[in-house]
Every structure is written in structure tokens, then in C-alpha cells.
Image 1 (cartoon, rainbow, N blue to C red):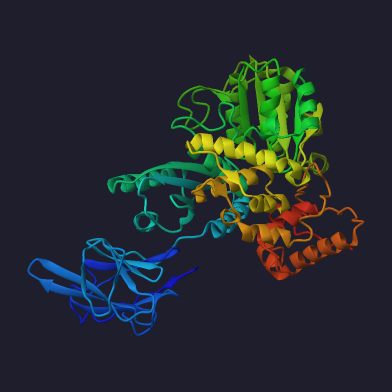
Image 2 (cartoon, rainbow, N blue to C red):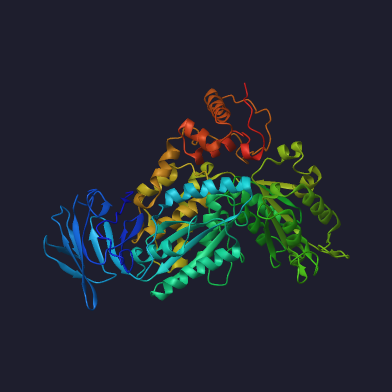
Length: 603
């Protein structure tokens, strides 16, 4: 329910104390606002526009309740009564009889329909804020990912988890008062929240989250927080949520995924089928050849890389992973090769690079297709010479590492465009392993569900939780555009929402899953089961032999042309969710407008 709350300040009689001292906080499950109260007098609350305080709650009567403020030598005396409402006014879990004025204290909650009101004192009133639903928050997060892909401005996703009596009536005012705009917050579960932190840097974001937790501790609420940054920790909704959730689960001081754990995918490839891929991985592990892992976002490419490392003779040596899409060229160079003291502004000391720190072990280069071309030339020299030169250094140092790399892009297309070096591709792609998308591995879902829930239950200390047959049917029918990472994210939240031993359909995002089920293309076999091409410039699109798919692709191209390549407007024109629209761009190999010129029509 999206309850709109509007409050009107009337009847203060021009008293100079009006608007100071007492104010009324009005809270529904998804919105809240506070309004200064007059120093004395009676105010009415209800749905009618004639009420001094208007509460647009469908369960509230036109005139629902009355609040009285009286002055005495000791201060203000507060009382409340029901005004003959249909659904009643409740105080301390007891229904108030009409005309029966009950005394209330500052900070005490009065329930009107599904809305709670509370008189507060000596706190500045807050402007209107909204508690976003998780579904709306995901859509907003996806929009921010798209915007950041164009602007290059990073942002953060924060996850908060509170323990004990962390009532939303206490948490929401704290978030609204201490989390300024343009930041956004949403409900993830009964004691869990998620924040979208915009226009900020790492240090300020961390400080802001710590201040929120400190305010909560002052009122006796303990909590934990985790931050995931775009693009460092991921460039999609599922990747960022997976990273934040994994950090939230990890013991304090331990980075999830640093010692065998993999943020967002668990050990799924090692336990849930994929026998042919595992067999090829075992053969690759026995040698020192470089391996390229292909697959869509979220299928578990890093899981497979770690599996190869664990099965190799280098298992006892370091495994170092670097997301090539999350850093600028200068930062990638410094991270990979290290730097000497004074090599650049801020280099107050020498730092060993990832390649050197992994000596004797394995280096995993995720999203290798996003590495800048100048950096590709330097990496090629390292692979050929087996030595690194730190930034600002004068002497190279020998290294002995094995390279594993991964991408969801069509590197052959990138090579033709000049975005990726053919000689580097030749060096890294001695052997190719392709991880199929989850929609082609539906029979693995029950085993994956069992594996993930066992991990989640063990980490949380809760008894075993299982999935009901109806919920499992929903999971099997869904097309999983986010693959294994999306499955685990969905189970994580279902676990948080479920307070019993069985996860049911009510704990799943059914609206999101239904939208995918209604999409005729989402259930069709992919054009390429290995990768999703994302070309950055218009190129002739390959012919489609299925007339239905060809017509669908042409409608997308026409919509983009009509909307001047604005993806949001084009999606609205076609009447489809933006996430589905973006998925279909990748599905059909249509260049995304922000990555190049507008797509051209194909006759």
C-alpha cells in the first residue's frame, strides 16, 4: 500500500510558540512526515481536507481522532480521543472509546488505521520522506547503474541490519533525520534496510553510515552495515546487492570472498551439476595454460576461476582477483604493477602490486573486455616477459603467475572495432570455458537452492529453512536474467522475510517474476548461449531466422529512433519495464546508445 500523508498546520491562533517544541510525527509503512503542533488547543486527524492533520490512509475515517494540547505550570498535557471512527483509534494496544480522552506521553504511539502518530518534543520537524519498497529500490538502483555508466560518477549501495527490538517506528525517523537528500532508503526486511548513497565519496559514505549506526546505538539498537560501490564492486543491481549482502554476512574485519568465499555465487559450480564444465576445468587446472571464461553476468565465472585454482598445483599459493571494469587506467596500473614512493600524488610509500603479491599463484582478471587499450599493451608485455615494472620504478621484478580471465562481452567484435588487442586475446585465451546461463540449467535450481539456503542458515545460526513446492515452481518458471547471482539474492531476501521454516510464494518478488513470465522473448532460447554481445558502435545486425524475433528487434530499433536513443522513453513507448528493455538490447546485440552512436535501423 502506498499511503500518501499530507499534514496541514492550522489553528495555531498566531501564537509565537507555534511550530516550536512539540510536533507530530505521522508514519505509515512507506512514508512519513512531521508537523509542528500549536502550543495549546485541539487538532483533528483524519482523511477529510477539513482536518488540521490530514492522514490519507484508506483505513482512516474522514474525521478519525482528536488530539488536545493543554498548558499548565509543568508544561504541556497531551490527550487523545476517537472521533467515532469506523476502524477505531488504539493506544497501548487498547481501542479508545469515542469521547474518552486518554492521556498520552511524548514519544507514545497512537494507531489510526494502518498509520501511527507520535508526539515528539525538541526535535526539528522533518520534510516529507518516502520509504521505498525493495522492488522500487531495485528499479531506482538500475537507473543509477545506467546513469553512472554514462557519467562515470560512482555511487554506493549500503545494507543495514539491526538486531533486538528494532521497530520501524524508531528506525525510520532516524533514517529520515540523518540521511539527507538526494540519498534514498528502502525496506529490505523486518530488520533490514538498504540505502542508495549518491553524490558522495567513499570516506563520506562510510562516515555517514557509521553515524547512522551510532544514533541507533544511543537508543539501544545495535546494527551492522556494509557498503558496495559502483563500479568497483559491480555494475549491475544483482552484483551490487550480492556484494553488500556478502559483506554483511562476513565476520567483522573479514572481506567476504577473500578466502575462498565468492560474493554473490557461493560454491555453486562445485556442488550443483555443471559436470562437463567441471571436467574441462579439471583438465585446465592440471596445466599452467591461461584460461578465458565466458558467460553472462552472474553465472558464476569467478566461482569457476577459484575452482580451477583450488584444483591446480598452485592451490597453496595466492588467488588474486581484479575487476577491470571497476578502476580507471591509472588505478589498474597501480593495482596490478604496484608503485614506488613518490610515483604520483598520494603515493606516500611503495606498494607491491597484485601481480607480484600473487607470485606462484593465480591472477583472475574479471571483465577483461573493459580494460583500457593502453593498459592491454602493458599487460601483454608482462605476460610475455614474466616480469613487472612498478609505476615510478626503474628495475623490473620477475613474477610467476597464471592468468585466468573472464568476460561477458564478445571479444571478437571488440577486436574488430579496435577495442581489444588480438595478440592479448591470443595470449589469454589458450583455453576457453563457457558457463551457460541459468535458464539453460533449470534442473540445477533445486540443488542450488538447497546449497544456498544451507549456507545462509549456517551463517545466520538459524534452523534449516526449505522452499515450499509452490515457491519452487515459481523459481523453476522464472527466466533468471541475473543468473545464479540473482537466484542467491532472491533467496537471501526471502530468508530475511521468512520467520518460519518454509519459504513460500509470499516471500518471493512475484511482480518481478510475473513481468518476466509475460515477456515472450525472455523464455526463448538465447541467440548466443555463451556471451551477450554489447557492441559500442552501430554495426550491421545479423539476420534472424525467426520472424517473431526479427519483428521484436525491429520494434526496439524503431522505438529507439523515435525517442532519440533515450532507453527509458523507448521502453515506455513499447510498454515494457526498463530492465527488460535493456536485457533485450543485449539479447539482440543492439548497441546501447550511451556506449556509442544511436543504433541504426536494419531493414
